[in-house]
Figure 1 (cartoon, one colour):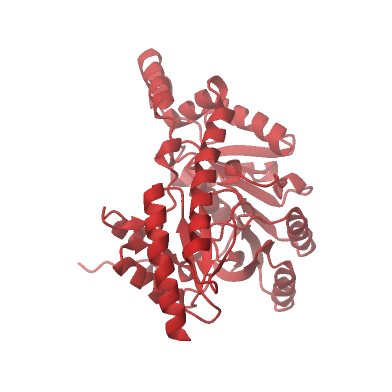
Figure 2 (tube, rainbow, N blue to C red):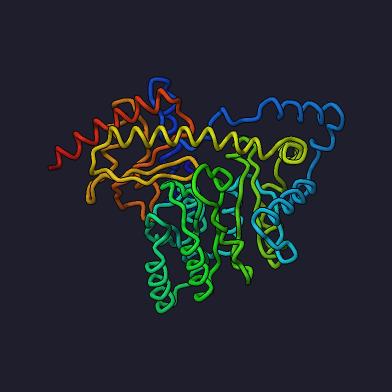
Length: 403
């Protein structure tokens, strides 16, 4: 029989990254396309020890249904950790464990957005969350990124126009630290200005911070949530990049007035997140050297990012621009203004190197981009050197052909 797909899903397309990821599974292809953490950072021995202990001594405690809001010891560990590290006030805020950071975005959208409402987003931005917003019928409007964060003048101008037009703007989506896909870190000044503007126009902020623990250069910058005085910031973190992505364990911090709606929203989706993996995360944070583990991960990414940037400086055409990430997993390169990176990426795949065109990260799916995202966390040193050389040769061909 012919099945009619709901209107909410009929116009959504699968992530270009996930489709390209299939090409990256070919061992002959050098993949800079995914967002996987390095396997060197997985604490496999410790995970094995923790799982074996609990499954031997008290298996029912991690195999039975759990609480919607999350495994209580992990919630308390994270509250203490975030209060000390980020200055979060848990007299006013609550924290739920969610099934990966992606669910944090889904629950936020589910409780805040009606069909036709506007969601503002950095542009470019993480495509997984963009599709989440689209699936709830939101109208996406992108605000351009600059090298020090979102363009706050454009943000304020856009909000003024939307407000004057009577549009309902629900929230701004932002990844201030080591942004995906650009690798850009927003300055403290920009973060404070973002908060001021959103406060002025009375809209919420979804601050996504999956890479915040992976700073390997520069100085820490306060989170927007730490500046929150009136409960308008929802803050999403994740263990996917610091422990293992297969755990699907993240956390969402929000004003206590939202506890009831978020609890019901999560019960409608998956009842609760994986209890065994919540247990493992808590045991690792409290009984092993969590800080040493994070520092080891930072060292891995410091080396990989440095190698990739050095090779880009050596091999890329001088008209190709890019930043110098201080953490996270990505850097984005930009062909000269006016060029479309999509055919460039298709040709790079033909030559055995996979990266992602910037158009995959835009609010308007029909728009073009001169950018392409590169991931340095997954490939080996040899693959980084070889792959960037191939891309570099292609940049010279592409730019000189245009000239």
